[in-house]
Every structure is written in structure tokens, then in C-alpha cells.
Image 1 (tube, rainbow, N blue to C red):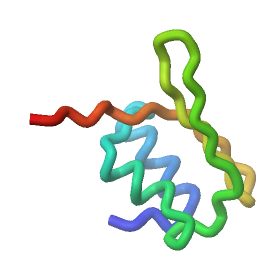
Image 2: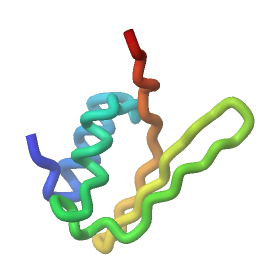
Image 3: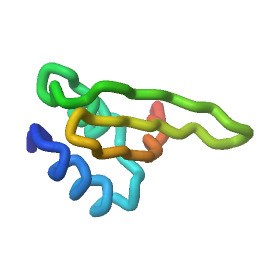
Image 4: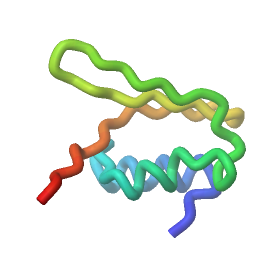
Length: 71
């Protein structure tokens, strides 16, 4: 699935309770697929790692990405 529109990203984040896996994050944050993204910040605060993303159409997202488990 492609997330071309901000409302689609919003729907995905709601569906996933603001917790994406690494593949979903790579798709959502791809600036070629989602040119409306104007800012992505990664913040480490105490024990939390949070992403903040803003778009030209005034969406603001706050989410986490699951840690990739290596086998």
C-alpha cells in the first residue's frame, strides 16, 4: 500500500495505534512518495524514541517505530 495522502498516513497511524514497523515507516517517510512532508524529527527522550512528522497540508503526526529484532 502506498501512502500518498496525509489522510492515508493518518488512517494508518490510527489503525496501528501510532506504532509502525520499520517497513511501514520507510514507506510513510519516503519523500518521493509523500512530497507533502516538510519535517521529520526523531527525538530520544529518556527511554522513549519518538518520531514527529509534519506536512504541508497541516497534519502533525507523532509515532513510534518498533525495534527491528535481528535473528
